[in-house]
Amino acid sequence: MPYVNIKITRDGVTAEQKTQLIKGATELLVNVLGKNPATLVVVIDEVETDNWGIGGETVTARRQAGK
Image (cartoon, rainbow, N blue to C red):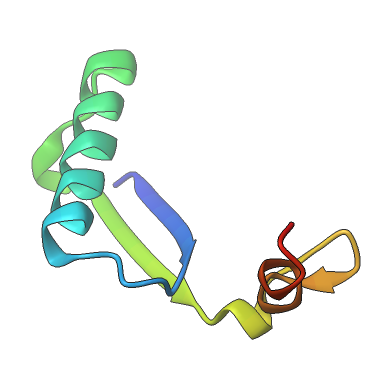
């Protein structure tokens, strides 16, 4: 049973966008690896920007600084 975990920042991603991510990840594993979509699991984790760091800074701080 393949398991795909997508981590994104919590930035107002819509339910439709999440549906597209799940569908796209499923199709990718089916097309590239020949996996059975009925047993493929996709989980989307939304992370607060205060809990996501890049280059020693939180995403919140980077965005406030215009980076």
